[in-house]
Length: 197
Image (cartoon, rainbow, N blue to C red):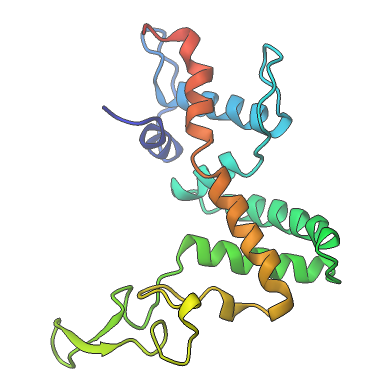
């Protein structure tokens, strides 16, 4: 069975957004359901007045992972604003520019934190072949990287930020991880009254 996220990824790139009265899962229906989900997750209230946990990042993240790179601007804007507001709770002195820089770095790592040197393998290739060697990658697995930061194949997240910004950066990534996957179920809830289940 095709998931709603797969239908959304297809609908974002569709060249035919015609409405067909015979179906309730056309590209235009799916895009409309995600629009409703965006409003519900932004406001924190369904159309029937039921409260839901607000998650304004959910639909922009879904758009980004469906291939709509324009969503980056929405995500960075929202992350930067929440980073700036959360910095007061952590008693950090950062400006809006620093908050935006942290937001961009967190999104870049969340989107593709794969080590480019070893292409996410954790080990280097034997020169001239496509075979892995016994040598660990020096960019993501080096012994000088503390063990708690070392994940084979992933860029060390903490090394990208000043020590005083690391807690805020980890919090931003956790916000994205919490929001990821919330848009699909909410979009299905918007379509449910029209579906024959």
